Length: 265
Length: 218
Image 1 (cartoon, each protein chain N blue to C red):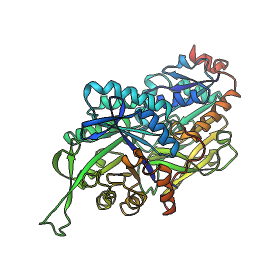
Image 2: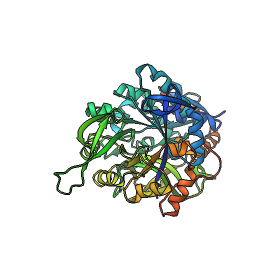
Image 3: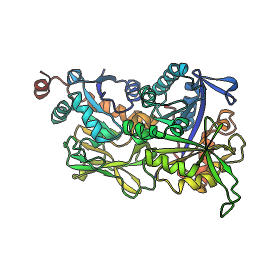
């Protein structure tokens, strides 16, 4: 039975874990490799690094970090943030990442998705979609729809997020990482409606992101949203819940999870 | 120390495999040509992505014949993901002709609720296989693929998994081994499997002693 995955996300800049508000007031939160190893030991199914520095001059530091992580953490590693070309993706994979997450660069040039998928296989290409709900007073159901945003939620693209998700998969995305901008950082739970709208129309796994506060949110993202995996940051970093506690709650709700016994790897 | 060759042909996460081998006490040797195989005890062929470009890159590195010879000599071989699929005659993914060492094809995973099949899935080990020594049936390993092996000889299947339909998670024919999942990304259980492979290699004489291998390398 395929497990539902729990994925901690680490914001990194300059080779360190950072916390801050949209690129300002970043505080150093420690060594990503140590934190990734701790999460792996606790039962994380994958690790995601989001390079929020993403400045071209910082790429060397990121690649070195990926290499250090791949050498000591034996679970899958996805790297997102600032990958704009096949060559940059190649460098990140060569350093030891298993997947690369594309976001703004894919919105700016969707052919990046099929070029990367053709070169490395679609299983290595995650397309991250940051979406916010917009009221739609003239729509038939007045439920509104979701719009995809670029550049960390700053640029309104005008693209319907569900249509963009379908397009990204047609172009070669092997997974979608769907973040609700409305819910991100609010603790109001994942946006199950958004997740359902996307997971219902694409064959690839959908990773839920944005808004996790407690174990019930993880269960709902999967059960109601049709997500295959759930990603969260602060509730793990602030030790509000451990990964094993989240997994125990998921298992209690009848969801298949991978239980880690024994020591870390 | 057991020296394990890892085929470096531009398809797969070599950093993780090399490091995982070090962790289990083996010495990884990244191999870009046949000459580098000399003096190694076992061969791992990793790989992700499609079959046609992978075969093309193996050809460009002149590794196809040495791999055939290696296997024909009964030397320890572990194919990971695409490295397992390439053992069969061809792939439905892109119509590529592959190594044809085992009868059968690589086919699309049928009735899968999601594709690619990505994540940790439980593996049922069906026989007493040395590769799974100390690993309980029902242990989860990390999979990333859309295609699966369909071997003519079902007795080579030593472990199965299920995602919509059942498919071979591991195959074995003597020292010829293959896994559809990624042991280098499967935590402690994956490391244990690689340690088992190293132990299998330790029980087999070194490369370079074989006449056919020597002839190819000469």
